[in-house]
Length: 378
Image (cartoon, rainbow, N blue to C red; front, side, top):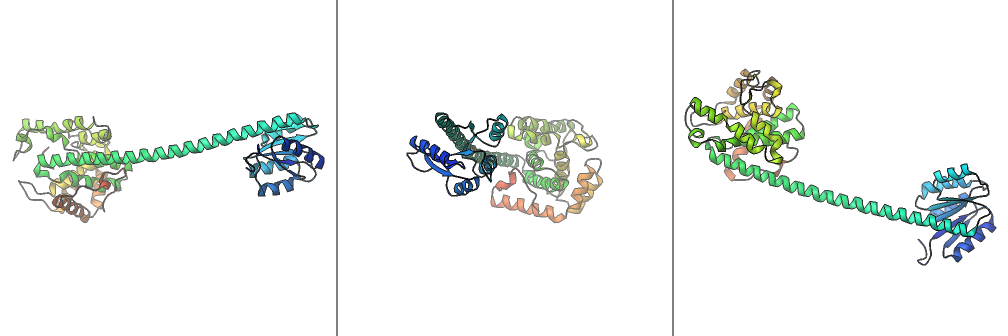
C-alpha cells in the first residue's frame, strides 16, 4: 500500500500533537510511511480516503474514545492492524481492546523499542492472515474448478452409460423381434405413471433403467423356447421364468445399474402374491416393479403379435382395471386410468418414428432427472 520501499503505511491517532510527532518521526526513521490524526472522527475520515496497514491509537481522547474508534474502524477496515496505547494499566481494558480487534495494547510512557516490536508483530500477523486468506481463496477456486471437472466427467460417464443401455436394448430387439420397441415403450409408459405417482428423480432414473432392461435375462434363454410359437410346455415355462434371475445376476454386478436390478428381478411379481420368483405381495414389491406391471401389460395388449393383432386401448384399460388388487397395485391402476389415451398413443408414435429413422435415443432419455413426455411370453 503506498511507497514500494516502505515497510508499511501507519496512521498515528492521538489528541496530543507531541505524541503524534514523536511516534511518526521514529516510525518514519524505521522505514514506515506515517500519517497522523488528532481525533477518532478525523481518523475515520482519513481512512476512508487512504489505506493503512496499521493504526496506533490512544484510548483516552475527547469526543470519540479510542475504544469507540477501534470498534468502528475495525468493522469498516478489518484488514488493517490496530495497536492501542493508554496511560491506564488496566487489564480489563486491554482484554476488551483485544476482543474488539486490537493486535496489541501498550501503556504510556511508551517505550519506542517496544512499540516498534509491537508494530512489526502486528504487521507480520496481518500479512500472514492475508496470505492465508489468499491461499484459502485460491483453494476454493481450485476446488470449484475440480468440482466442475468432476461434474463434466460424471456427465460423460452418464453418457457412456446411456450408450451402453442403448446397445443392450438393441441387442434385445435383435434377439426377440416379436417385441421390437417393447422395452423403450414400456420405459416411457413407466415414467408417465411414476411421475404422477410422485416418485423422486432418483426413483425415476432407476425405474427408467430397470424398465428398459427388464427382459435382459432373455439372452440366456434358448431360442427354441424364446422364439417358440404357441403355448409353452410346463418345463419350457420353468426355463423361461429363469430369465428374471439371469437378468438380475447380470445387472446387479454393474455398479451404476445395481439400484435398477430390483425391477429386473421383481417385474413378474403380482400384487396378490402369486407371481414369481419370490411370490412377493403388495408393498413388498418395489414401487418401480408395480408401475412396470401396468405399463408392461398395456404394451403387450396394444402391440401386434404373431398370434394376434393389437387390441384396442379400451380393452387394455378394462383388463388392467379388472386385475386391480390381483395382478396390479390399485393405486397404480388409479393413476393409469386418470391419464388420457393420447398419452400412450404419442409415445407409441415417437418410439416407432425413432425405429424407422434409426435415430438414437436423446441424451435426456437417461438423464439423472428423467421427465415424462407428455404381456408377451415370460
